[in-house]
Image 1 (tube, rainbow, N blue to C red):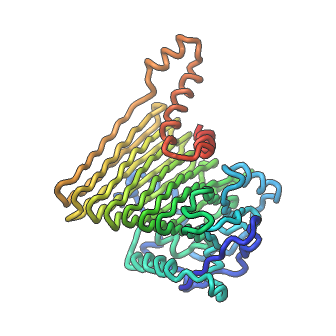
Image 2 (tube, rainbow, N blue to C red; image 1 turned 135 degrees about the vertical axis):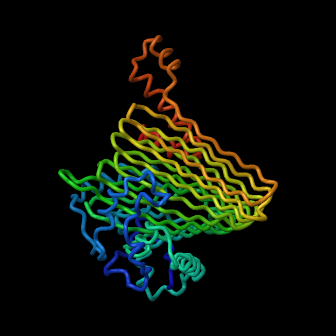
Image 3 (cartoon, rainbow, N blue to C red; image 1 turned 60 degrees about the horizontal axis):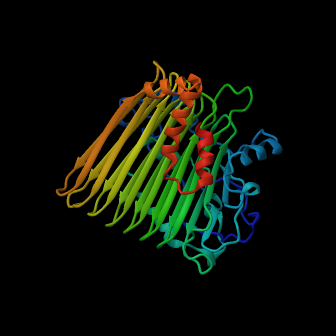
Length: 445
């Protein structure tokens, strides 16, 4: 498998080619029938998920042909523009699972390379832009999953349709790639399943901000939801500093979003990850982070905001394989109405991974009598001389604070919203970009 990356040569991304034919079958990973089936609740990781709702996502065993959106060009443009954070930032848009060059924006700055993953697998030219190491890394990742893997990875590997490959490297005109954030927007408008991939390689000592949004839009009168799987691979080289904000949102109770992310941290690499979920459908993110060399650091903040009968699940797996690693996780669960939230956090400290510091804290807020929240910490410690901690709290809005604001003439609805806004702001404080904090705050509130 060979990947080539196209440098951004146009501010309007005219150079990004459109997908004209299906992905070669050899680019997909074949899967055993047992893996190409929905997970079931007797699997520990899916214990609190309404797995019967997932049958629709696995129902079609054939690869679906590309389908054009039924939205008018103006409606689609308005939908995309409503989710733009920085008009001048790098912008990469996928519509119904395929790269949409007409909405992409790639400023003519050095240090960032972007390309359609499907196009790369069909291309036989552009030898000067070959990135064999990226191809090798991805192939190694796929090989590790061939002998058996989690159901969503199996489905995504076998049926992915398109995706985006991004390389951030040092450049004379932009030594640390820190000038502009990268916005990746995946918009689903059709009531069928799409499967996409995101590859990000942050090279030596680069500094990168990435905002990823997965947004499902229910067509008017649709009786079924739009379903999405997203498989992401992130490689952070030595000294790379990456900040990722990942938003999953739905507007339809039948919509399903399943995302799996695998991160590899090299020596002294740093990742700040903000996981945001909001809506009424079924959403799940499984984040696996591997500390492969000493000095790697992870800061994770999560906010799950379930409304109506929304079902939001966040699973993390921190794997400390070497000494002197750090990971700190704080996740907040807000369950409204009959919503359900789950945080499943795992920390594994391997034998010999001394002087590791790892912690996790889950704060749950139940905002109605029917709301539910599940916090499940898992710690496996096989090394001495480590610092580990975990905790979980469950509560409601502060009655004393509500009473105080009402005594000052604030309505109960406004008082509740004020307290909720404070919880959201606290969850977003790790995002360094002020405009992004404001944008995500508006979405979550």
